[in-house]
Amino acid sequence: MKQNGNNDKINAQFYRYLWAYILVALSGCLGNVVDGIIVGNLINADGVSAINLSKPINQFIFTLHLLINAGAGMLVAYALGKGNTDDARRFFTRALCLSGGIGLVLAIVGGAIFPDQTARMLCSNDTILPLARDYMQVLLLGNPAFIIMWGLSTMVGVDGSPRLVSVAVIVDNVVNLCLDIVFIQAFGWGITGSSAATVVGHLVGIAILLTHWRNPLNRRLTLVMGGDGLLASWKRIIGQGAPLALASICLTLLLLSANSIVLSTTGRTGIFVFAVCMNLLQVYNLFLSGTCQTLQSLGAIQVGKGDYNGLKTVLRRAFRFITVSMAITCAFVWIDPQAIARLFGAVDPAMIQESKHALRVFALSFIPFCYIYVLMIVYKLYSQHRMALFISLALSLTVIPVLWLMARYVPQYLWYSYLVAYVIEAVVIFILHKARHIQFKQA
Image 1 (tube, rainbow, N blue to C red):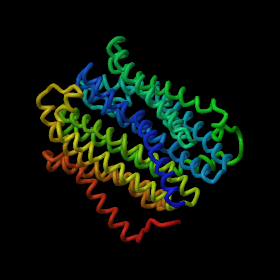
Image 2: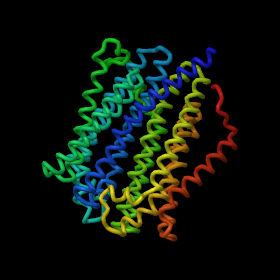
Image 3: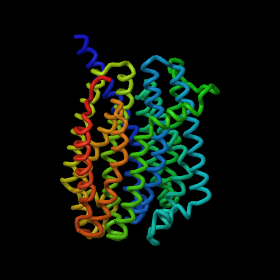
Image 4: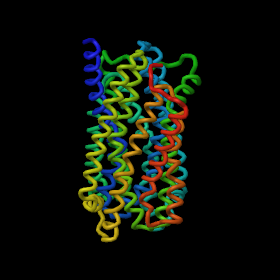
């Protein structure tokens, strides 16, 4: 009876954290989708392509968040699970300072000093380049708001207020959506207004999250100045977040390579179709990010308590949820992929026809990707760090050579590159798991 009661408590906590983190994922993922839909309809299809060509920048910013805040969030969760509030506060403070400092450097270098060079590095098409440059510059200048918003969301959720995180993210996205239309159409800012709306939305979200500390009961995580071991703390934070960050930086390299290969192989039509496919990935990421953040937070708390039966309960719920959400999303895409292309402003019959096939293939391709990514978190929780590191690197790096080979030798099958790469990786993971005799058991 005691075990059943504990499972019921964990189940309730799982879904409370899950829905909060899914809404948090809206801040990083759905914002791009909303931008794409509005830009495609208020500007043109090239605007959607420009946003997709800018995604390596957004992914790099997200990588910094993972490196700092995802790692620190797990360390804070471990400390709180052990009742060590002092350590939790130190990790929280040092992660917040590191986030702000790195974000400021990136804003100055990329957004203020080298915006033209950054845009040219990511876009080789002269028609799309001006749109990409305008979008990227605001994205870079506002990147500290991105990192701090995601970081505070992680910490406030770990500190026991996932509902406030939900409210902050909902308001963030509502502001973003409303200001997209106002800035682009009413103010006439064009694609620059799309980036500006996203940044302002994050600033509003940050203001809401800061109200967490107005309640005297929410004082477990507070800023602490000074103390010993500053470099050691940063090293632990970065070391903890490294597998997730490596996966993200590899994804940045993949986005750079894929955009270049698709643009050179299929031209403006292909890069628009690919942009729509990448927006489809953002929808999958809503569920994937929510599931992984829940595993990291709630799972780490169970590890900190030494409750590995509780951890298994969290894992079962995570895999069940990701399976159902992927099945529903994939079915939705297969029913009418052409409607999705039109949603992003496609009017050219060639773009619409190409999207019909490509979207269905990508909808299937992202299924093994999601399972593999969740499995990486599982290996991390069970201290199988080498396997977690391997997966984080292979998730994206496997796709690049497959994409290049297909573009070179069988370009008519280019859209199958992701599916082929992820199936290959799944087979390799299975072989390595068996060869290393890995067992998920109590540490």
